[in-house]
Structure formats: C-alpha cells, structure tokens
Image 1 (cartoon, helix red, strand yellow):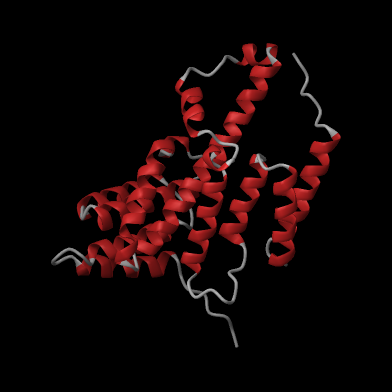
Image 2 (tube, one colour):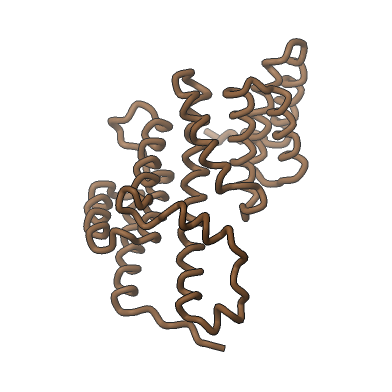
Length: 254
C-alpha cells in the first residue's frame, strides 16, 4: 500500500493559522477578519479556508449594529458562496465538479496506485462537501427570511433550486442535517408552491425516519402548517401539548 504523503511545512503552518483563526471566531471578529484577509491573500483557492469562513457566518456572534440575525447570516453565507465559485476566482468549478462526480468513482486500488488521481479525488470531495454545506445553510436562512417576509420568497425558490442540484437526504451524514433539509423542503412547498399537504408529508416522514433534539423544529413547523388548514387548528394544539411533554422548558431556580 502507498503511504500518505506528509503535509509540507507550508501546509502545516497554514493549518495552524486556520486553527488559530477558528479560536477567534466567537471572541474577536475584528481580529478574525484581519486574519481572514491575510489568509485569502496567501491561499485564495483554499477550500479549508472557505469552510472556516462558512463556520464564521453560521456561528459567530451577530454584530450589535445588525437588526436581523437571519439577514446578517444570509448575507455572510452568500459572500462565501460567491467567493467559492471559479467565476469569481474561487476554487470551485461547479461544471467540472458535476462532470467528475457524474463518472463512476475510481476503484480504491486504482487511487492507491495513482498519486495524482488520489489527490484529485480528495480535492473534489473536499470541494463538494463545502459546496453542499454552503447550499444547505444558504437555503435554510432563505427559508427563515421567507417565513417572515413575502419579499424574500423568490430568494427561497432560487436557493432551493440550487440546493437540489447537489444535496439529497442520501448524501447527508447526520440526522441534524437531514432535519434541516426536511424543514427547507417543507417550507419551500408551503411558502413557494402553496402545497400544504406536501409540506406535512415531508415533515411527518422526517419525524418517522430521524431522531434527535432537532425534531422539535419539525414539530414547530408542523404546527405552522396545520394552522393553515381549515378545521385542523386542534391538531396543532395537540401537537403543542405533546411537545411540552417531550421537550419541557426548564426554569432556573431563583
């Protein structure tokens, strides 16, 4: 078997800088952005850097000057999405990526025998992973905005169209991600297509197939949809009672 080629000194140093930057994510946004600017100059085509910038967009504290968390995070995710595309000098050529994964994946033995093919396979999988994560986050935030503002409905439609090209339940690893996808698709059916029954079907399937505390979000979404049906408000009320039993609100003692 061929051994893994060790990282170069430059790779090790760059990874250390990325790790340091990640530690600044929740502590010092100004310093974080300074490091990000430096690393973009150093390696403008770095997929791990894009992945870290996506984590910043999704997890960092929202600036106190911002009025809407959803709008701010959506804007930050869109910046990452645009920066990753080769049309904006980013590392990901979506057409080449689609063509690569449209072919049968090389056998493991073939990859072991061909260092260049092995390297290309690793790079393509890295690119696909960060693209999928970005598209999922982008559509989830578009759904949050469209649920509150009718002017954002078109944005949800566009985000889901792009999402469906690359993301399906089968390609997601965790139930947390699968719940997020179910809610996105249910909101798209409810808000963009006015297909309430389809939304209910998607959410009930998620409840049946998935597990975890994120299922509370599925119940919350079901309550909204049931409220849109004539004569089904009581179903939503019953669901709310069940949610209180399954997900009790803990009160801190005085």
